[in-house]
Length: 361
Image 1 (cartoon, rainbow, N blue to C red):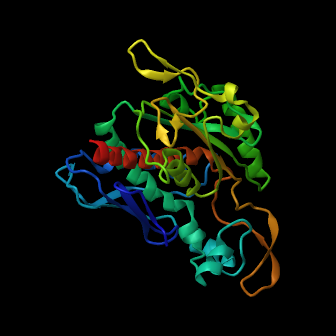
Image 2 (image 1 turned 180 degrees about the vertical axis):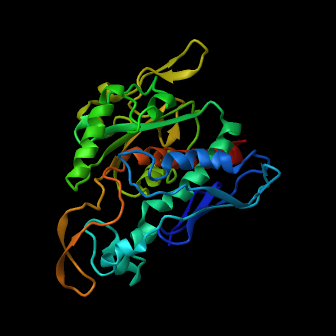
Image 3 (image 1 turned 60 degrees about the horizontal axis):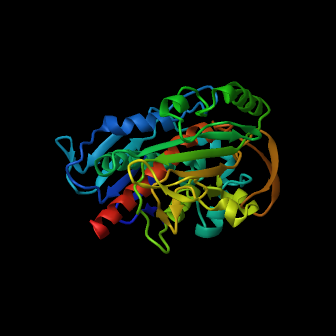
């Protein structure tokens, strides 16, 4: 399986939803970076289940244990292993799913590829795998803080179904986003989004939406054309997350409705003599390389596949049947996906920061 990500700052995640635990091995982290389990725990707490009335009620503390790569509070330059033990797993809730394929889940495709699978909680295809990514990203952010401390990574829930937030990427703050359980930067949309998620859960249904992200303070010059363009690696990172169905950067698909004259970002010099653009329809990336303007992109997440309604399906013996969802699931993944988008962004940027430093000094 391809469970590794990155070139110089490289991670390998492991574990399954209802196994003994999940985690990550980080290779390539520089030595001398201050790191503790508390640094990792902050981000894991933002991702963990059971954190609000609109998320899954699974009760997991998700406590991080650093097994290697840190001595006296500093990274040693050797691989860093982090594990989170599964505590509140209930595999009995998935007995029926051992034979019946859940619609729009990875049950059938895992069987088609490997000839066998772990049906408990989705096994390796579960969003619980992302714990390793979030833990690794906490380390990546510590590295970024030493290379480019001015960088801010700020994702927020931009929409849930047809409810659209109005957020200014230039001024939105972390505190604004984290001030509500939906994690949207628009206080006017919080109640409506919460009500929509609650209504979907009460109906045994689920909702999807989009997350928007701005990265401020990225220097010009990061990115490795032609195959490892910064937007290509961001797209790969985002689309590797569970439930993602789309990625666009800058003007995205809306840019196809503009002419070249309307779409181009004119250059100018600011008061300090720095090259900037008067607009940012490129999303901070040109030719696969950062231009120093904020990176702006959006990620689409489908409605949660597990719904508490009977659906048509087939079983692993080729018989048509029906299946109703069981277990504990998010009626909408968007609020808990915000730290996942942040994590993958940090991993991509950390890797490219190290590659730029290694190649260009």
